[in-house]
Length: 88
Image (cartoon, rainbow, N blue to C red; front, top):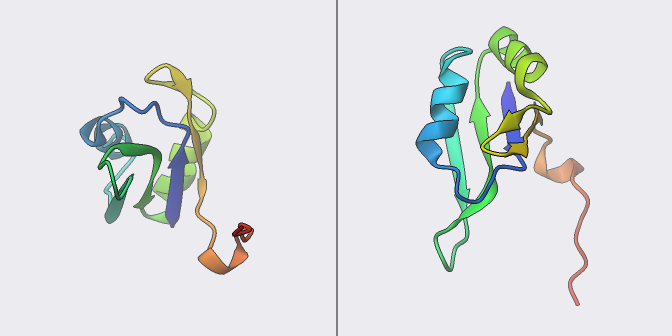
């Protein structure tokens, strides 16, 4: 299952998130999202884990404090199902 992990504090390190996820199982893939111009973290990432491990992670950590913020963890939506932004 591909997961969205959001509302991360901007000073959160990639390794901190990886360590938190590894407590619940093996990470199959991990995408740390950064700003293309500054290289700074954007406050969210994506990870892929086995379904049962991902479900356990969601139940245990969604809405919990991580680095001073309440993180959001849920199943990632496909790009086509996201709302489209207006371009002015």
